[in-house]
Amino acid sequence: MRKLSRKLLEVKSVVKIFHIGGRFLGTKLKAVNNVSFDIDSEKSEILTFAGETGSGKTTLARMILGLEQPTSGEITYKGKNVSHIQKREELLEYMKEVQPIFQNPFETFNPLRKVDSYLFETAGNYNLAKTKGEKAKLVEEALKSVGLTLNEVQGRYPNELSGGQLQRTSVARALITRPSLLIADEPVSMVDASLRMSIVNLFSDLKEEYNVTVLYITHDLATAYYISDRIAIMLRGDVVEFGNIDKVMLSPLHPYTQILLKSVPQPDPEGTWKEDIKLSSLEVKEFSRLGCKFYERCPSAMKICEEVEPLSVFRDGREVKCHLYSEELKKEEETLPGSF
Ligand code: SF4
Image (cartoon, rainbow, N blue to C red; front, side):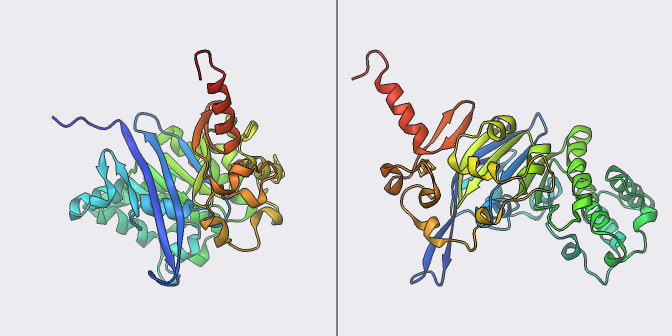
């Protein structure tokens, strides 16, 4: 008998390569480099993937949603390989359980269509309700869980709601299917600063009250710290530090995480990275370099970092991908009694 997976989601050695400027003559860009992590099915959590533009976090989210295929590696949901989902019923079931929340609520909804029609449509599409009354009940429950009522959105066009209300409606739409996993890609970056915390708090409430796990993709470390249980810091496709939120944010080990944290004006929840950290443009050079991708910008860079890609090591309760720690580990092993 096939054993049921205790993992909700498993991402195993996932790589995504894009070919820029043609498959044969262009440049290969490894947007996601050998990323592995899992999410337990027994306990809901908020797991953040944070990084600057071009870090690979959105590509990773798109692969989990099945919108991109990994070049290599495997993504499984409840033990089933997401890339192998082909039957309509299986796809529908996956889409029901794993729901996206996109960045710009004004792009999620057609400006010429009333927003409540999306909610009723979702309730109908997944065979969750047959009659109009059953659909209305589901829609009302979902709206209630995001602090809205049907009265507030019924008959309204997107431009008649505030950015915050619209993003809440977008979350309500996702909740209609009673998902286990929400993938929220920069869900507050287009929302007014004054409303940002209310959306972020909403994710915490959903985790606590509805047992929903949230994969929160953001460049905003302040909101990430506020709501997350675990965090993965991404840099040019690599996860460079990954672990418990307090460990990573209060005592960062990777030089990149340390610099990012210095640039966040904490504890201001609207704080974002300073201009010098945002980078003026995406540096393809960093993506394609042999050694550590942070080599040019790292204040602790060593000779080995220039040409040898660091391995992920487990250090002080988190994973960190940096030669400072793999070299330290090597020295410790060399001094162990009985070592040659
Ligand atoms: Fe800096 Fe080297 Fe660590 Fe990269 S591997 S972050 S260059 S010390």
